Image (cartoon, rainbow, N blue to C red; front, side, top):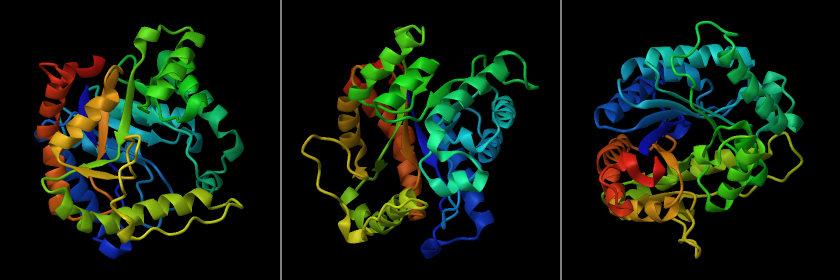
Length: 336
């Protein structure tokens, strides 16, 4: 099991910096994470966001692969229904070759109508289509349908799916489930059996809504405006192109949220490394976790908080998780 950082490259108007500077700084963060021992850097995909949400994660992943030496290079997630599967197979193979075999390919269906309209894709069939595209990408690699092929054989592929249907789909496809949930894990294992795959090959990973800070109470007023922007863009974007009403806008004063009675995560938790390790160990114990992924930054939050978050996630958290899970090495924890 390793810990990594997710980059979405948001650059909101309120805190805007020149785009070239913003991309350069984000690559420096990737290098910093690599040097400090993080297990992965991950990139995600959306289109038509006002804040410039990263639209082409494999392009940025190639740049990060060339600037790093050790971290896994992942997508969490790429939207295959918006691209030709041969193009994904080729682009992903190039990233794997540049990185020396460090690619983790996370794929998901997406949820926004305007993105599907932009690419002329069928939103209503998105779940079935993502399964078809996963199969086709892997077929192209396995049969030499694109050249050159990836270095890894096989490339680790992940399904960023939610709910019982998505968990079973990931299992039937024989790929990892990019969602950590005790409730969904049974559906995932059932899908593995249905697809003729050994349930012992089960593996899960996830993005956890956690930022680390030495003093969470002091960090919250500085992060809350950025979190409000992030959540508003997600929630407003989810109803674009539909007849659903727009949800009410969140404000910085709405955060932090009170802890849930069942111990589940809020929209974001700002925690010390010690508290985060305790919470995470409770959540993942007994699951075959390979990657824990954390936000590197929330919608352009202050650089000093980003740098410290990267430091704590890369250096401090793995040690604490190893202690909480009773292993000698974080890499041996939770079946990883």
